[in-house]
Image: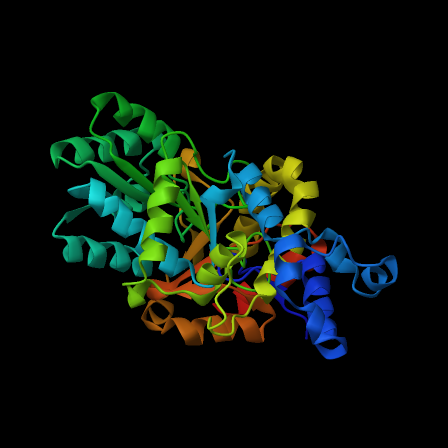
Amino acid sequence: MSVLYLDTARLGRTCASASQAQLDVNRLLVDDPSLYCENLFRNGADAWPEERLAQYPSFQHWHGLQSLQREFAKHFSISDPENVFLASRSVQLVRIASRIMFRACRNVLTCDMNWPHWQHVVADEAARSGQGVSVAEVHSAVFDKGLSAESLIETLAAAFLDRDCDGIFLPAVTNLGIRLPISDLLSRLKPSGRLRFVLVDAAQSFCQLPEPSPTKHVDMTITGCHKWLGGGNPLGVAICGRPIVAEQFRQILQSGHCPELEDPLLRFSQQIGGNSVSRYLETVNVTPLFTVNAAIQEQRTKRKHLQEQLERQQGNLDTVEQCVDGTPWNLLGIDESLRSGILLLQSQDPLHREADCQSLGDRFRKHGVAFSSYPQGVIRISTPKSLASNHATNVMEQAFQCVA
């Protein structure tokens, strides 16, 4: 049975180009592993003969590591590709970014809608450096009181000023789909002269929103490639908004005294860029570089349509409302100004609210729909596609009726 996949916010469907790149890498490693070498990573496949490029077609678009960094730089509107860092684990980038942030900041404002694991890393680095984290509690106001974007800006700005903060760590879009007005918040706070560092989580905004992340006043943005981009393999990306931040990032990597910050792909990519790869570096899985490169090339053709994609996603609201009519499931209402393309529903049935997340998700999957499920009977719908087709509507209606 085919499954209606509505869980892009967790793991996006691998796009066709990334899938082809994965196949080409696998075939290359079978046919001639000697080609899988430093020269390929550094300079690309431009020097390959046409017959070989025809045999491994995705490599026609692989022009070396710096070319991939340049694609990310363009996407996030920065000029220098050397201000882009790539790692196998985005959490390592968050830890390094936090370490830099707490060199400049005494008290960083976050909120209770941050991704918990990254929030824990930031709090850990604050404790390590003897600095503070202030958590603005806004979740209840957003979900229970219908807080608007304008009111949320005022709430966060007041928390920043009242608690004597000098740094910010917030998501552009939360994992539950709340679109935080970060650009407007930063414009509101900049005149105070107290803003010393801004770290933005763009994991859910990259390739979902027309603007991946605010770049003005942002010191570092961190995202991944396995959700809305459709890169297949996880690849963490850090984009430094200022050259001095990128230099501090490199200094931490070069110090070599912090094993908790070690990431083999991050170190390898820096050494490839610096033309001095250590002979004793551990074996690194570099396949994500090729699959993500292919995905971002495909995304380039779709980028101008991201606004239309977002409007389609937000239009799914009406379709989902029709599908849950007459069931215990209700859409969680949030103010339109804070909406992304992610939708949340909650069951009014006490049995659903008491059920563990895994069993609730499994029940829907048995009826042909894949969601993310959360405590208290909450499910998350996330897809870049419209759900207005007869097939999608019929499958969802049946699933909600059966899990009622």
